[in-house]
Length: 411
Image (cartoon, rainbow, N blue to C red; front, side, top):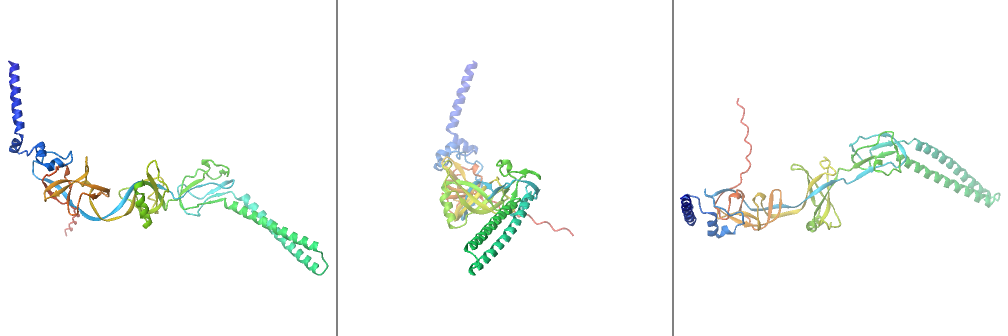
């Protein structure tokens, strides 16, 4: 009996379910639930045409509240974004040019130095002694040269008077030339010693930041030491500074054309609140076949040292300005199987799915290549509740409210 009872109950349930499915539309309307999703899709060609994932049950509570904005042409910069690396324009390693000993260090590690500042002072006592010696030799050479000139002059006078010989005159002339050559050789030796003395004062070749200094006063330096540890310090030029980046090769013709017309502005974006501007300085002469990119460098003023060598930043290369660009907030653009689309308000209160072509997105705005016209309204908030053909209650975006003035103090 129990099995018979359960069989009867199951049969009744199947019959009731079939009737309810057959008259589901009428039942739903009487209960206030609107048209079911599959019925709406079958009945409305517009609903069937919308991207998959945007079809669903119409809003049972009436029009969907959405925020809209009007598409209007405006000037938009043409920006190519890339990941950049900050590089010093000059990074110079300081090494000794003579064998000597460090006598004084005139700079602190990490200090900002100017071109020509004295950084290290080496032992120059031996060289100065050699300089004194060669200067004394030069004075001797000068005296001998003067005597040789007088002897040559006397020999010439005696020869003209018939009291001298040609041999004596020629001998004196030879002695004079030898004395002059000795003087020139000693003068050259003096210049050589002066150059070596100048090597005992190591000065900053460029302005920049000096790095760590591994050596201290008293260290013996050898010019033949070619190891990495032989570097006294490294100076990195930080103002101006390079930002190196790689951009896809498809942008190379536009970049070259922009550089041909004039300076191309480049922004180095440090964070959301800080960026520094410069200009394009260099494009590599080959495209990297492995990545399909070309390397470029921008020279950027860096007096505040906001950019540091080795730092990663976002580089914005501004190729020009598009004067009549159609743009919408990036939040309005949705992605579907057929590509990007937006909801356009038609007839004042109906949402329509519109396929669009996005040329680029920058500064939270998407520049539209095709699919929209000036004056149309697109939904920027509330799209998740929309389907194609759904009624909407549109309102413009709220502008940020200005702070209320403080109440005057009570007297």
